[in-house]
Length: 233
Image (cartoon, rainbow, N blue to C red):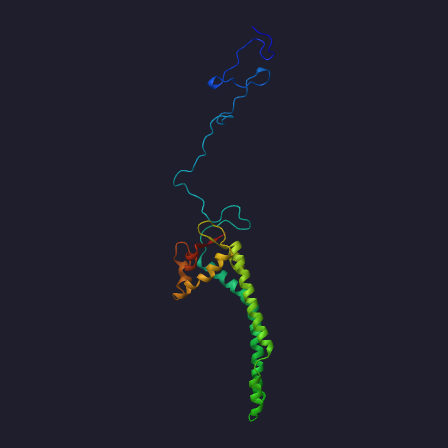
């Protein structure tokens, strides 16, 4: 019997671990706490993560969590919602250019009417009024209208590519996303989709009506670039 070890005054043999290793002891020779039931201790084999059984409903690819400012999708957008969004966007894009074009047309019409102020037999007055043409301000207004329409169209395209929503789509609670990932298309693919709309128009505009009976409510342009329009509410 040995009294040299203060932690083992009676000379007890410490418990052995697996493979003859000495099990760790706590202070004063106490045994370490046993891990709670169902939770493996340190060094125990870990259980592999459980996988969902085959056929378990998976989360749809579009509308994944963590997309700031975007609601979760509740299905494909209806044709009526897409049409209303298109009309709203067209109104916003064409509002300022339409006003400028209207002013230019009014100025042109007033300059043409100068011919009527000439006497019937005053051929020189009529010739001068006809050859004068519209004032230079008319061409300036037309150029400004074209630039305004281009700037508004690019703005809508950037918004649609980066967030999936134009002003009209946001107002109608719908969003354009990739079919496989649920993420926005990006500016490049959104521009390609805009060009691909000619496919919707060449066959008597049937492509624009295709979402009425398509399973994924896609136009021909959507099928060409792999995009879908989904509801966010």
